[in-house]
Length: 290
Image (cartoon, rainbow, N blue to C red; front, side):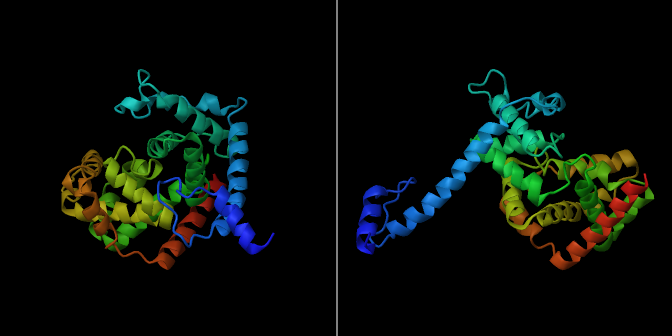
């Protein structure tokens, strides 16, 4: 077929108005678009087939999903009386992921991550693939049985605080408080049910863009902003309570200002990677000696 005929044939097949309601410009390359979309459609088809297969069958994943019904008790869309009730959608996403990544299966905290994705995308399949990107690539070993990635990042935060906010580190050391005691939910739930929804969504935008670096930015910003308040603590219980309090109030509600402050927190990518490798290797050695 001649190029001109090919272009006209593509123009006849491709709608003049795109799926979002915009009219395509006069110089729009219909042939190139059709070629691209035919390739992309094959990918979507493969994903849809895989998704349908992952929903079938039973496994031990179902037995481990005991806390799923406790997901977002204050959200009306997850209540049994809701129509439709998102509990079923959540179950499907988590079950499919457990079949897809059997090394992880289901881990507590994943229900909150998947739940947010469902609320945002309103799609089981899209939520599944985004969950796979988070758990499988952006945050590897956060939700594996040993949780090495999660433990490493919490220890790295402790080292960053030691460097940037030494008074807070000294307080933690003085009372023998492990970082996992006060920030584990920040990391494992990616600030879901901890910070306001609008703020969490902006953090997640950055998470998909730059990876876990944003988690450290946010954690350090919270601690730095409330350093004086934290240093008033006189006991372990007091420290834990203050770390709960610093995730509330206007500072975290004003999401745009908060994110601007978070990006004022200087973090060298090279330095952070070196620290992650160092602490990670130490965590592996500790695990192997047990």
